Figure 1 (cartoon, one colour):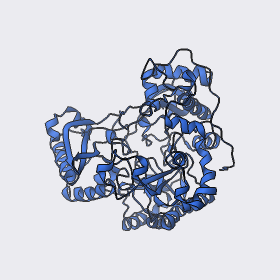
Figure 2: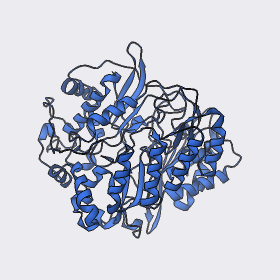
Figure 3: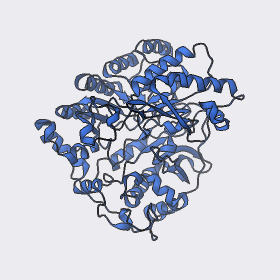
Figure 4: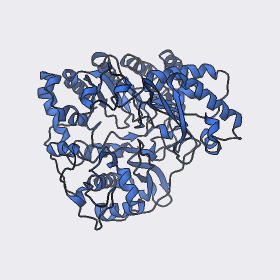
Amino acid sequence: MSYDRTTTTTSPGPAPVGERVRGPKKDRSNGQWAVDGRTPLNPNEVFKAADDGLNVRARILETYATEGFDSIPADDLYGRMRWWGLYTQRDQTLDATRTGKLTDAELSSRYFMQRIRVDGRILSTDQVRTIASISQDLARDSLDITDRQNIQFHWIRIEDVPEIWRRLDEVGLDTITACGDTPRAFLGSPVAGIAADEIIDPTPLIEELRDKYINTGAFTNLPRKFKTAITGHPSLDVVHEINDISFVGVRHPELGAGYDLWVGGGLSTAPRFAERLGVFVRPEEAAEVWAGVISIFRDYGYRRLRNKARLKFLVADWGAEKFRRVLEEEYLHRALPDGPAPIPDGTSGDHVGIHDQKDGRKYVGFAPTVGRIGGTRLARIAKLAEAAGSRRISFTPHQKLLVLDVDPDKVEELVTAMEAVGLTARPSPFRRSTMACTGIEYCKLAFVETKGLAARVIDDLEQRFAGVDIDTPISLHLNGCPNSCARIQTADIGLKGQLLGGSEFGFQVHLGGGLASGDREEAGLGRTVRGLKVGAEDVPGYVERVVRRFLDQRLAGESFSAWVARSDDKEFL
């Protein structure tokens, strides 16, 4: 991808829809460009209007990397550098009592998190080795697979960013709009084009979106971030209900394979599931439809208050019917056909285990502990994959890793070898279904440790449930703050980090959430157990207590979430 470009801070929009959109407040401007004009209404909008975030790349390469951390002005350091996937990481000397009380600058260290934009693509083992080398050489061997299918490094010095970008560019990877008020990296089915039971291969759509719309000025000043998910697999493996826009593979009875369109999902402190627009999107028009939806967000999204600026708030106010009408009449200038809804096939969307490919080979899904890999281990994984006949690896939105194209007679050899480096294709229910965000180790918003705690909890639970047959998935998600990067509201057991009092930290409990995948046909938000707070050291005991009650009380074939829905709060204490 070429980065020689001249960005602009404005882009043409459509004619007004006609009626004024009702936002959070009826008596004041909500900063909707198509309604209120483009006068910035808060400091975030001011700095975005002053200079396109993509333009900071040149300053990083030409000035900051040579003159050092102290040369970076605040608007770039805490703002525009995010457009290239760079966040300052937390000063590790500051404990949880300082979260929310100090400014971003006061909480920051002089090191960065660097996020690689993967876009759901299958990676070659050469690309994987490059990622591993960056971790080993420039990031203190740090490397996490995120639940957005991205890679995150920590301990990055500004002086090393040009070298990181150079290495990534050599193998066709980048960090563009990996953060910021932009179209973030796309979620894509990790088995795109290879799974034997795939409905449609989303790879051409993802590549078209990258080629047409990423690294242009059209969508680099959005009200907030914009998350995309695209799958053609019947396991519904890209958590489509909680993205701003999702294309989900379906078969239309007359028009063949294409996509069902969902808009307006998101979690954080105001969780809301996406809504189906009820349209069928032909593969050849999907990129145009994506551009129409993100343009609606750019032009009509609420910019006055950042906590109301996600697309989900606009969809909530408009409703699916109006959103579809605006999309068709004002942006596409044509109607889209009605289409069928996706139906999960009953298999797990994390793809852990051994599976058939279209070509007779196998793909094998492994469960790293809460996505934490490290560069040294990733390099070893690439070598083991090649020994099994594979040169391709993919990541999942569940913090998992898949080795593709495995020779059938080498599957068990690979499984055994990967066990030796700490990745299993036959994990316990807890190792398979536990996720954790970055936590206070690096994140300035967090109150609690998550990654290390989750690893200890998994080890403890495996001992507590040794010999117990748990024949249904029970997901456990740990999040360091209320923002739900680890999707706590859609877990069977979701733990939200917070201060319990003084300097003690722990978790608020959410129970019974889930997304449509596996044996669950509909998504649902978890139930908050009022007044219940669990200390970090008490997490294994609490999870054991609740899971054993479920196993004792469940009806035949009943899921954990169904048991939670029919039980009284006393069962969860």
